[in-house]
Amino acid sequence: MSDPTVADTRRLNSKPQDLTDAYGPPSNFLEIDVYDPQTVGVGRNRFTTYEVRMRTNLPIFKLKDSIVRRRYSDFEWLKNELERDSKIVVPPLPGKALKRQLPFRGDEGIFEEAFIEERRVGLEQFINRIAGHPLAQNERCLHMFLQDESLDRNYIPGKVQPSSDPEARCA
Amino acid sequence: SHLHVLTISRITSFFSFGQSAEIDVVLTDAETRKKAEHKTEDGKKDKYFLFYDGETVAGKVNVTLKNPGKRLEHQGIKIEFVGQIELYYDRGNHHEFVSLVKDLARPGELTQSQTFDFEFTHVEKPYESYTGQNVKLRYFLRATVSRRLNDISKEMDIVVHTLSTYPELNSSIKMEVGIEDCLHIEFEYNKSKYHLKDVIVGKIYFLLVRIKIKHMEIDIIKRETTGTGPSVYHENDTIAKYEIMDGAPVRGESIPIRLFLAGYEMTPTMRDINKKFSVRYYLNLVLIDEEERRYFKQQEITLWRKGDVVRKSMSSQATIGAQRFEGSVSSESALEKAAREDSA
Image (cartoon, rainbow over the protein chains, first blue to last red):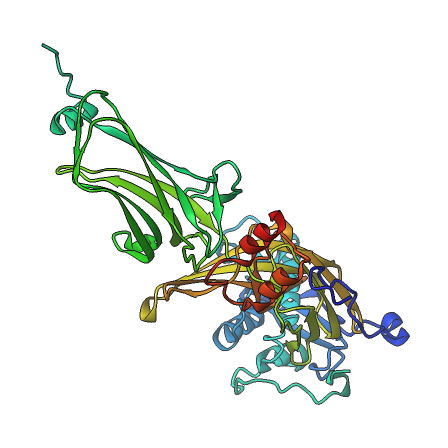
């Protein structure tokens, strides 16, 4: 075994996995749905809101199940906050569709069903990509966006401290 | 009278008063000496005679007169053995770390083609031949017939390998790394020093997994560093990417690593060679999650070259054991000595 001319290729000892780990629920469950678009208001003051529902078992989020209503400009706000404060490369939002907001269009503009659906899909992809990023999870603005009923645009930006969850300590 | 066509070769012979010569260098042991493949600067692979530190370089220089019957006047004939480092961004300056010369003939004239013997005894060749992205280290013989206006010379490149033996101290690399509350892993590689045909054996143990991992790979990265002080330049090259896991791991899972190095083109680790350049190797453990985010941990490993010949005789083992790990024997190489003992 100690012959120096032959490489040591023995299997290394490793801790065996116990059954609760093998068959337990995943500890990285994070799902965010963006759905149920509702157009509120009348005439030129109309806008569309979407329901944003987050289900997770990540300890960094205070609520394991939360539902809020957000509009497109709220998503823009979140993107700007993260671009300024966090070190992540923020993925793109679906388009602003300014052309659709011009008058004298033949269709419903930004209230077209097909457009709203396309935007909904883009917003869902956007928020899922961000929320899964460890560096974005540290930002106050993300937690406020996902779990506070309304956005306080005068909030104090800052970091969220990871909770002292017993699960976080290493085996 | 002859009509002299003024091509380049004719101009030369016109200036040298009608006589020129060809030189070639032939090694004494050209039939028996092994050749090794080595990359040239433009990426092609060629074979050259292989030498080790301490070996004698001996042979003959043949000077063949182009026009027999005419005399060749010269200012001296010599042969040099040169080891030099050439930085591509500073081509004019060659840094010679070995420079030996043997005079073969004093200034005079040759009336006929002639052969000269030479021997560079037990030549020190402290570094391995290396052709890289920004630097080249080479050894060559250069035979020169000096003349008033233009010399005739011929270079013959050789390749040098530096050998080492199993290091006494070769601890494993074992570390726990991660991102607070998201991902904790413990990785282990069985050694920190590997020879070029070795196997990296190890494992990755997942202590905590809160991100969705798609796959994990090990990359071997070669970093060539040239220059000193403020103008240090690093050139990174990914030699290999080897996937070790496909799919999402959970806490408590252990992923084995078995990576065979012989399949990859690598050199031994070269540290601060003549204070001009370094070539170092790193293992980069990369985890990629479902959003294509990459989490990585880089770890340097030392690569060394094992001699092909494994001798069981007592004296050669003792000589091999006496070699320091990092360097090679400065005098006669253990292999050459063992080879002689075997044939005796």
